[in-house]
Length: 434
Image (tube, rainbow, N blue to C red; front, side, top):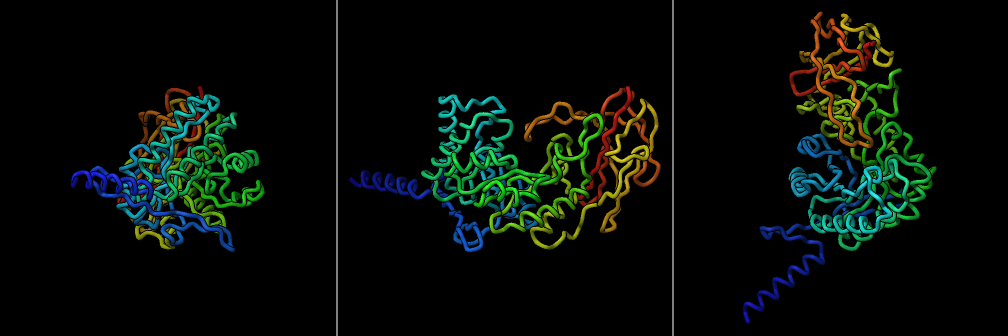
């Protein structure tokens, strides 16, 4: 009788834990979820976490979490549930919340939203992930897919998103749910309002258009709350290009000014509706170039944008600041001036840089072919192989560079180091004549 009693008690505890969103770990330590909710106020909307105001100062990241919290950030965003347990635990350890991405398939990757069996299978897989992680105390919100509106045709994707949002509302009443758009336009906002009423707020990825986002949302009829889930430099599809089609990248110093202005005049300006943002990317990746979007280099060094993020989050610049680049020319021309070179000839290259803390700076050069195996919407790209480079030093920040023997499109990169884990970057696309 005693064994039956204790068995019944354990069963009752498990049932109650599930009802109230508490997940039991393998070592019997419970997860206790922390409620996130959005309130309508006289001024607009406010995000509350555990009953207290919570403005998202976040980063898209899968590593270096300690730096986010140390520099004034409070949240991270992922694009899938890969390694979710480890990510959630690490975020919790560093006082961060997580907008956990749910890996909903995109039509541009071959998924057919008219295939009911495939949609059902995906739904069940997503539901299992939600149930698995819903009780974690670091969880803030669910991101249902990423940029599903990019290069799509079938509006049934929105029905699938709403079904997932309704499921989350039923099994996890503690956390917010949204879906992430690539930019905004009237058609997508109309679809979201009509077909996806179950989400709590809108999420938008935008780069060059960040400053206009508040007005654009209002013009499209979105008067609800939203967050910016990716923002950063001018996108490779938005800025200047060379005559041979190579996008021109801003220097790290130019990016720093861009990040600061866009944050101040959009995210902070529209706090009545904007509940925060996730800067992109707290890390490094190859996307058109290996330096375009990352706030860190491949070996973990921080550029000027990282200084600016600490400043906009806390109002204070770091004690050690990154070097800055003021100019970069090849054969007397800047990156946007269509630099054509002859094969196997010598040309002068000059970078003008300094360190605001008067640290001694050093220079590293790298030559790459222009990336040709490129993706869309952040899809995986492989970094081009580093080319053997022939050059001689001619003074601080000056080299004589021998152009490649094979014609085609290339980029020359410069990395300016301060010796204290800070870096500045720039590159020039150039074309060697056939």
